[in-house]
Amino acid sequence: MLPEAVIVMGVTGVGKSTLGAALAAERGAPFLEGDSFHPPENVRKMSEGIPLQDADRWPWLNLLGQAIAARREPNGAVATCSALRRAYRDRLRVLIGEPLLFVCLQADRDAIAARMQARQGHYMPVTLLDSQLATLELPGRDEWAIVLSANDSVHDMLARLRAESRIRSSNA
Image (cartoon, rainbow, N blue to C red; front, side, top):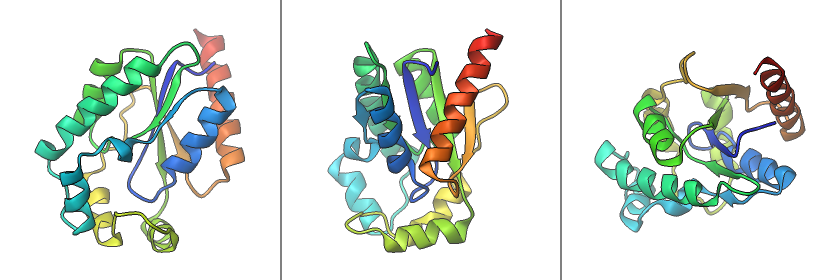
């Protein structure tokens, strides 16, 4: 069984929202789209191709973490958040509490760029992809995280999450 709180993480355009929404629907849990918690100033910067700095991210992470913590029961909560650095994930753990699972989506740069160019109405330009990839710190072995290929279908990713949760439950 998956924990009450799951965050689907990764760089822009990797498919966090697609998997997060599907996982939330499967669990009957609320879905929190991390991008909707950005203040207007962050959205303006990103839409202008300006990478966010830590000072921009901390208030956003605080708002998102508090919202997830408030929604994690009774059916849990699923959220999206880039959570690119270990420090950001650590902050979310403090705000949300344990257990908290990070599902890290990965794909190669060209596949992500193609997805970004195909999507409609999103403020994040492809020009920010390289800065996100440079900032990304993959979860360490000591973090509770599952890394999935974003090249897989949503159906296959959900099946892998169910299998991983059964393995963890039987080992507990």
